[in-house]
Length: 433
Image (cartoon, rainbow, N blue to C red; front, side):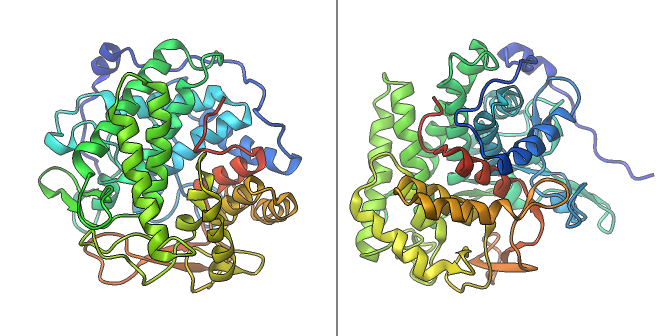
């Protein structure tokens, strides 16, 4: 019989921190009434949380099987709960009026960040991993995702999943701030809100201490790959990461006004965006090459064009990136991830719907939203793309020698959550209040 390695359950750490095993709470009204077509997406996300028994911390799996229900057949994805997707789901569940479900994800994140893990040391301590194991979080802190490899006869952890992308860490912080910023929401008790702010402070401190870099346009590097003795630092810098960080540090400065580090960190991230805009002139390059200094002009990234436009103080000049995105990424009425336009990226098209609404293009926003809401899989998640697969122009990790990161026609939590945010007109870069 196949056996998986046993990990010690550190329930005492949760008790010592006072991290809430979130109590059941009655659903509250959504921030904005949702279109009828978007409500099944809320039901699908909340239903996945509700299906995990009890009221304790949970992470949701990011990918369903291609057939549309059940775990994915790829062992690397079958149990993977990507932090970015779960942060989006947390924020979307608030928009759905299901803060009770959002609180269970928030409790898992606060435990992941605040609990001391004896397996981690140095740069690893307290950081947000790119992926955890989906399901009920009965260990403290939540363990990284992994799977048993029959052929190798050993437990395997993917270096990217065990690593930390700076932008992913920022998204977790943004989601936790959405919890902290809602004192009137009874699903978020005071202790959970306090831990959410403490965890966000720790995330912000990790980003500053471990990724701030003076080379080239300055800013912050992409994070770390791997874990423990196999950990490696990432040298490239990402435009979309810096949009995330401007939002994170700006909101953290408002939530924690006594700390002068947060406004300075926000200014540092904003300066990087300004330099990228100057380098592109009418759009944002994706960032830099691994040297952290040379601007990457090899490809265009949709999120690099759209996300800066969601920032509260985005200058009017940057709206040129919207036109660039339409020309470089537009395909079949939607948007592709990169500029080879080989198919619609559903998640990015949902992002575009929210940006169009923010720019006052209401009809275009509704058209794009209608497109993405029509891409529901049998299991409830939205498909990641209409095509069998689409390219991104990006590599999965530092060992990749080709652009092997692709989106496939698989049901995706991230796409589903972004569609809810667009339908609710809920900007994840701004306060959830």
